[in-house]
Image (cartoon, rainbow, N blue to C red; front, top):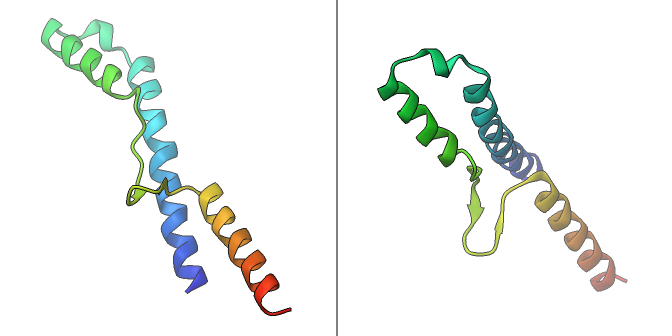
Length: 84
């Protein structure tokens, strides 16, 4: 079950990282050499890329590897305190 959770959080983190690179890839392309209509669409895409895509755990938090490690630390602390 721990491995399954790790895989879920890993891919959620990858979605976040890759979505942040979309804007840079658009900017580095030769969008200024395209038609005016395409330039406008790409500018709109660049503006939308300011907000990263992320998977959320309901209203609680965003799924990242840092969140996963925090959950593991909290679980370990809880188990250590309870079973002493």
